[in-house]
Image (cartoon, rainbow, N blue to C red; front, side, top):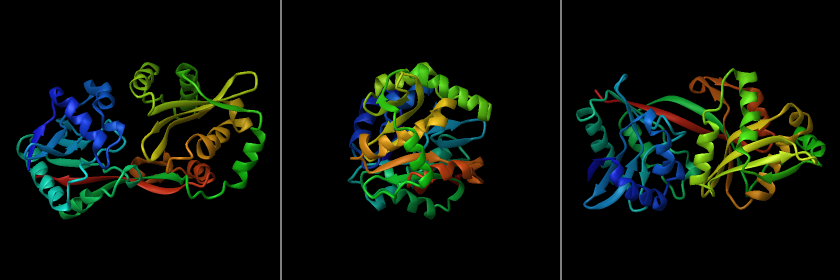
Length: 313
C-alpha cells in the first residue's frame, strides 16, 4: 500500500472514486469540499494498492495545534473505502497514514470523525476497529435523531395536532434561497445570537453544483407567504435536514410539522432514513432536551456522530 497527498490534479480521480465507493457521499466531492478551500490547509490523502485507488481520507492540517482533522469543514469525514478494500488493508492504511502524519506533516494528533453507518451503501466500519487497535480516545459524541422511513414510529399527538392546524399550508420545492435565509438568520440571531454557517451566495453556489443533492422546500400560506423551510442534503440512503427554520407566524400554524410530514410521508418515502442532525452542544456534554423532544415526536430515535483522537507522538 502507498499513499499520495491530494492536489488539484487528482480532483477527477478523487471524485470518480467517491462516486463508486461503499461509504462516500457528495460532501466528499471536491466540488463541495473546495467551496471553502481558502479556510483550510488541505491534508487529504489517497491510498493505492499498486496503481489501484483503494481509499481516500478527506483531511485538513491545523498547524497552530499540530493537528490533522478529518475534516473541520465537514460534518463527518473518515476513511472513504472501495468495496474491494478488506480489514487487513484498512489496518495497513492506518499504519501508513499515522506514520505519514507524524513524520511528514509533523502532526502530534489526529481527530477522526467517522461517517455514521446510515450513510454507507455497504458495511464500512473497519475504520472503527482500526481506531480501537490504535488506542483512540472518544473525545466527542453528538446525538442525532433519525427516522427509519420504511419502518416508522407513529407521530406523537402534539405533532398530529400541529398537522391539523397546518391543513391549508402548501409544501413545495423552491429556489428562493434569500427568503428562506432571511427566516433562518432571524431565528438564529434571536435565539442564539449567531448566523447561518453558509451565506446566501454559498448556498446558491452549492445548489447549482449539486441540484439533485441539495434541495430547498418551503411551507407557504394560501396567499403565498413563505412561513417555514428546510434545506436538505440528499444522499443515496439519507435525507439530512441541514437547516430548518420557521417564522413566528409559521410556528403558530405548524408549518415546519407540515414540511417534515411531507418529506417523510411523500417526497422522500423511497429513501431509507431522515436524519435531523444533532441536538447536542459542547461535544455532546449538553443535550437540548426541547429540540430532541421535537424530533422524537416525528418518530426519530438516536444515532451518534463521534470524534476520536489518536496521539501521534
